[in-house]
Image (cartoon, rainbow, N blue to C red; front, side, top):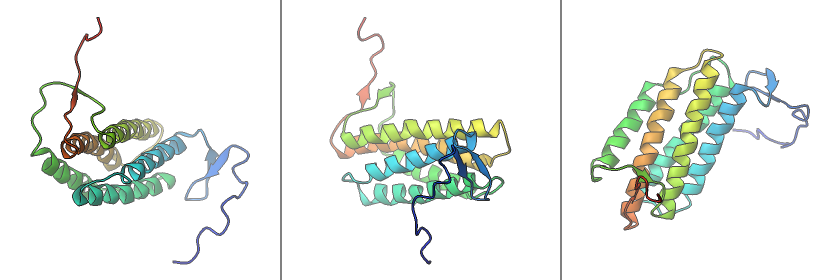
Amino acid sequence: MGHRLTKIYTRTGDDGTTGLGDGLRVKKTDRRIEAIGTVDELNSLLGLLLTHQLSNEIRVSLTDVQHELFDLGGELSIPGRSAIAEPHVKRLETILDKFNADLPPLKEFILPGGSEASAMCHLARSVCRRAERRVIHLGEEEKINTAATKYLNRLSDLLFVLARVLNVHAGRTDVLWQPGKNR
């Protein structure tokens, strides 16, 4: 692959617009750009999470997700393009089932916390939920790939489970929600 970015600033966005992958220019406040930006934010959070001590299995899973999120961003940048498909969703379900199998069943809601890596994973989960909402919001305006929203939905579930797994690996317990604790 040759050099693709020889100049980082272009000044083309100074007027409040940005270019899509198909060359179309849209406002930076466009629903599509909001969705792309939130997927990018999620990917950045996963990059930060990957700076922590993680098992190789978690590291590989999250790195694969990062690549898929970049594919999703590319999909969103070209209206009508599909990069995420049902096999991606199924792969997440398989990983989710594997990590969840050894966790104790939940009887209470849990709060983000425990270990630093777990709390960061919860933060990524909440941004993932926002990315899902942004993509669905885009879908109210134009046709979207439904596999993309399923993927983000499963990914947020996976991040929830991984947050619990990371607490186990750190020797920490989940922080249980205590309804009405401060009445």
